[in-house]
Length: 156
Image (cartoon, rainbow, N blue to C red; front, side):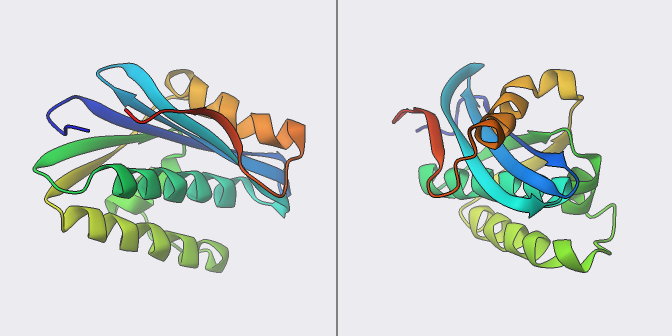
């Protein structure tokens, strides 16, 4: 896939209770068209923040898989102010439960940046993240624990 196009990756996480049954979703948009999305079950007794970070990590993994070299840029959008600000370096990661997830996300980010691909983290209101939100809730409702719930997968 060409990085000369306008590329956005949305992510979200949700939990039914906090902690509770949790899931996450990711949506890849190219030139404002959805080309890939996926929903994952995170666990039975997980926090919303863990679900959010898991969504971000799954999104970063997909970016890493699809885009082998730059130059280019990807805008990563999420409605979790905490996760976005931590990835931007504006908030410290104080929770021991999130530190490993944060470091995993930063490691993937670093590998992507080594390919001359710029990543921009942007906080968006929930209303602009509705598709990823829908996906994050899908697997929570379906209680799928063994495999990701695939909703759309293309080779765009």
